[in-house]
Image 1: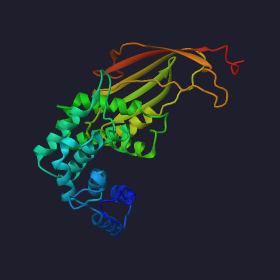
Image 2: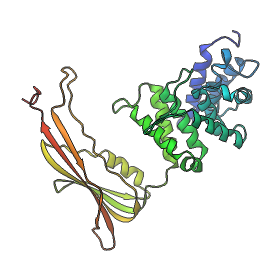
Image 3: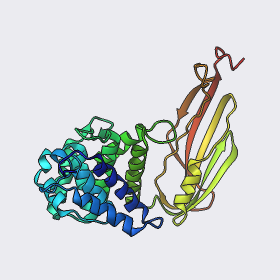
Image 4: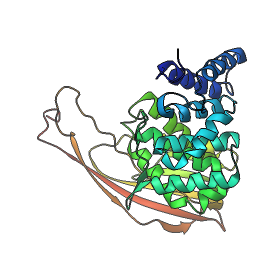
Length: 324
């Protein structure tokens, strides 16, 4: 085959190369397979360093090669010389590959981040990167961009681009479909990967130790001890709390008692039953009232606690046949 042909095998081979490249950090992967896949791609590289017609696959191949531990200097040079012409997805892939393999100069990588920032679509609440002319979705493109900013380092994320990343993260989370993930496997893979990259930069939430307690109508339903060393596991448990509520009014009290400082917020997710066959409204109407957190005395002397009062009222929907 000619190197200039739009060979779908190039894109799919690059995709698998990048996937195996990431997997090798967690499970054994035959290095010979990675080497042969890389040789296959190199044999189909165009004379100018690009892949596919008009360089369509170049950013994907460069990024996948970086994930597998390979540096493609010819492909990087091709994209570097055309950085102002790249669509959002190709630019985000170039940025991510550059930070993974430290390609180009620090000045160049900073310029690419500024170009990415300029291409973001933002409003008062959210930011995202559209797919441009690429085959990637906007979710995938936004995930690439977020991950690139995260790989740039803590200082970049916490200073110059903090608001942008916060809004883009909010948009990415809003794009989830139900509780299972995003619209496609690739979207879910890269959205989760980007969020993990951002989470890795976060400082410990709790400096010290304490206990999160959840009370419903005065009765203790959950107690989760939290320390600096176990806080990640503890918050997983806290997020998975489940309390069945009967119809009527309920007071939910979430408290934190302990030593040290912590920045926490409490949310309540209401799960209602919807029939998959008969499209009726939920069998209960939910009214939620959230009060401002208030300081209170801790359970031990010299300790300080916070109370976050919430009141949920569940009213039966008598028009729903299931309630009858």
